[in-house]
Amino acid sequence: MQNKELVISLIQQDLKHHQLIIGLENISSKAGRKAGALIRNGSDLHLDILDLCFDTMKVPESVEMDWGKTYTNYMNKALRYKIDATAEGIRQLAELCYTHLKCIVDLEIERIEKV
View 1 (tube, rainbow, N blue to C red):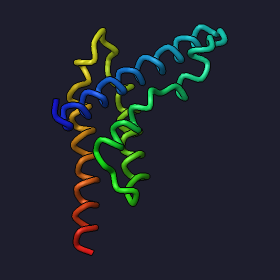
View 2: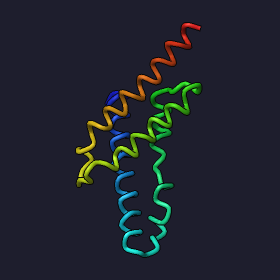
View 3: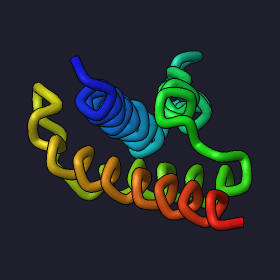
């Protein structure tokens, strides 16, 4: 698997994970019950996939914040999508996220090389 496909697959799984955790958190709060230990702070549960993508894409430190904000924005966009049994429904969003993140990296590398 090439790095591009690997990163897109990782993003896709992270989008799905985010949908499920936030969805469970919302169900719990709507039911008027305290969430269980797993869901109580679901928005803080992550699989460190962002870090894997960051390292794999070799993100320059100078754009770390922009890159991270962009990644997080896509996680939030995933919440607008229907939760399906598989992650295929959000594949296009993962590809778009990758493209956006890659542009940030490529532009910064180009800028650094000119200096």
